[in-house]
Length: 453
Image 1 (cartoon, rainbow, N blue to C red):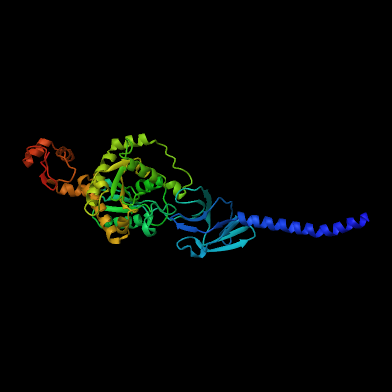
Image 2: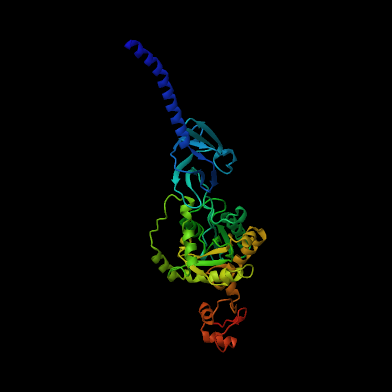
């Protein structure tokens, strides 16, 4: 009897164990699906020397990457990940990627990038930083990167007057969209459009030549922007172009900033510098800038070379011109100062221009307008030209023009009698005598006779 009952129990327990194992497997499967990461957004940015692919994530994921040859391709495996994005919508033109294939496998998604040539891959998992959540970045560096776009080094001793070189830096770019405005307007797009118009106008002017720090939708690290401007392109002047934003949509007006050696001149200037200096983190730069010299020593060099004073003067000229076509922030024509990393170059005259508030509905509409962008570009270039005419570099086209008209000088905003005398290497008294001036009062637009020293 006991043996019969035992056998019956074994017969009944067998199906129960099978059912239990089935339910356990199903539970594990459902648990795995519940933990799977869904990728709903992927972006691709093409830079001069690499292609960046960015997977937006709700939480961190692991990956494995293989570089294969014959034919060249990159294989990215994403475990416990579902790709809910059409990779065929990505613009792969001007990149070494010839096609993208996606395979959904049990517990894994495989993405294959077919290539026209070998690349050097690098990956990075970026922690959340506004406006982004977690991001998985795959960078494919070109085997033969496009050379940096440079201008010839000025030949000061060649005898021929040289052009003054202006580096135009559209802020943000790529993974760093900058501020946002109504209708999805992005700062990185607006400032690139304005920068291209500035470059075109500068190149059309005698005695000036422009170079863009970036000419597409990709990010350039802050220290690299200065290097491209000064080391690669020998720039005399650096202009970083931005569009402002604030939580109060009523905030409005353009403004100009220079570097500071005594802290920010206002709370707003300090806030803007902090936001601008966070760009590298937002864009996903691999390592923070390693600066061998501290800010104080750099600023000391700038004070010695006069770059900071010249930056403030340039800023005033640009503000004066911009004030004729758009409102200035707070109605002030004062150049503010703060510790902007992108301006920290002692050998360049450098300013940062905020073209208006993209967070203000009225100004956002203007910033979107090509006609208004052209007005802004015209005012910026007019301010730069004004600066070059009053502070011509030795050997430049502007210096040659001044020499040709050495007997006269037209007074510009911000000029003083003592400053004009120093610039032309004559005494103030000689200047007064030649122009029948009884005191130090002079009038903008007045033409002075410059006596021979």
